[in-house]
Image 1 (tube, helix red, strand yellow):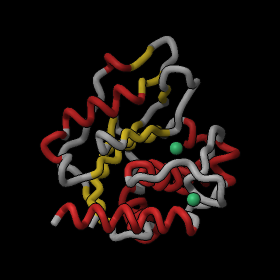
Image 2 (image 1 turned 30 degrees about the vertical axis):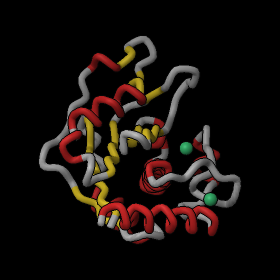
Image 3 (image 1 turned 180 degrees about the vertical axis):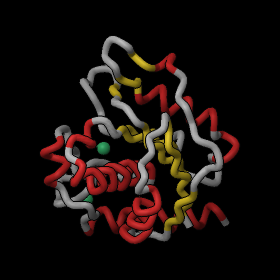
Image 4 (image 1 turned 120 degrees about the horizontal axis):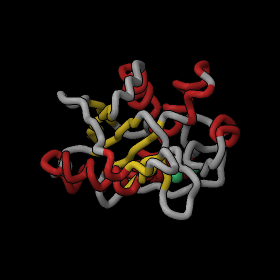
Length: 181
Ligand SMILES: [Zn+2]
Ligand SMILES: [Zn+2]
């Protein structure tokens, strides 16, 4: 069983957290359980760039890893942050996965522009970044693991994995469960 801790940061108020959790569980090709932490997280501003009005996503992931280190051998951490983010050399990112840390963050500012598409976009980002955490790279098929660098590209791709990614996820899962003992 893959256990995902879904954390809301900076009053992300995803609102649809239980919907997101239900959809993730239903759409993932391997058994997955989503849990919520007791406390809400507020990100410190020392990795917020005030000129760009964006978080440094890689530093956010490191911070969250440190904060939840005591849980990280049991969970994969998925953090929804209210705000925008970047990494060096990119203008912005919708999300960033750090597989070695088992932490991924996704950012809601850009996907909120169209309220009727918000939940679907959030779901795609969550599936994509979790896919990275579970060993997937980017994919050229009709697949949620396709790289998307604009809202148009994000809206275009499906909220599902292709057959190749599904079989990779199943392999990852079998190894993971073996190691868990
Ligand atoms: Zn990606
Ligand atoms: Zn794929």
